[in-house]
Length: 329
Ligand code: 13P
Ligand code: SF4
Image 1: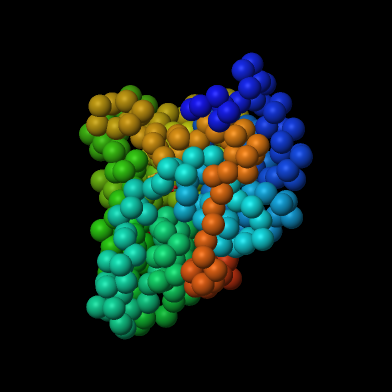
Image 2: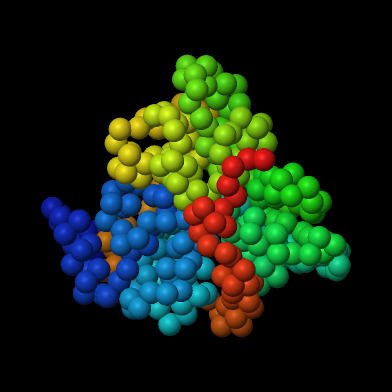
């Protein structure tokens, strides 16, 4: 970082971010996987569906999106008149990377009688090639509205697709993408952890592989897992998703114990999303100061992608506890 791209030496970043947020008429949106210091200063912390809804509804002039690029892209697709900044443009997603638009297009063309139900963790181009977008908190209620005889391609997360397919007893053509973070949980280490905490339930995100889901007492989105944390009867919960969500749990439920599910080395650090972790307070300060890096999307592409997102927003029946995946059947 050169001198002019750095905050002034000794700057109080929290105070500066606060000043810039007001000056710019900006709203700071953060995903539950962001670092605690970012979650704590955000105007709103939520899951990907809630953040999309906030981005579509805000009357702020600037959206500072503390999440990954497909989330900031979604905010720009839904609110094109706003300036949308992402603190680090390299904050991508392994699911998005697994699904190049030209390959997805060819796959669609090879299956003309299928509709494309697509997880929001994908590029704007793939959204434009899709019929309906889903998030993990809206997937089940949306899938339930699609007639049983309709053939479906589900991408890019084969674990979420497989989970839905098993739960609904419905065949779908699955794109072979995975989230590198959820893929890294170890069944063996999870079994050891469960043995150390007898009776502690496991809450898992549906991006986890089936070997982890099979041990879960609750499967749902980040918001769904947070709701479960508030309502489960015990005092210790094992959490199989990106561990930064535990910050919200500990804040809201200081008397309960939350333990991150382990990776293969028995240490949950390998389950920190490396993309989400690229955003820092310093980069957020610079993004608000310079209104860069800014998300720009060509208008024709934006309108094409908006159709599948609008379909999601219309069909999603609610957020936590309504459209969520809910308890494992
Ligand atoms: P949700 O916030 O919709 O549960 O999704 C999690 C995720 O993968 C974010 O990358
Ligand atoms: Fe993508 Fe996984 Fe990171 Fe979510 S946690 S942004 S799905 S890599």
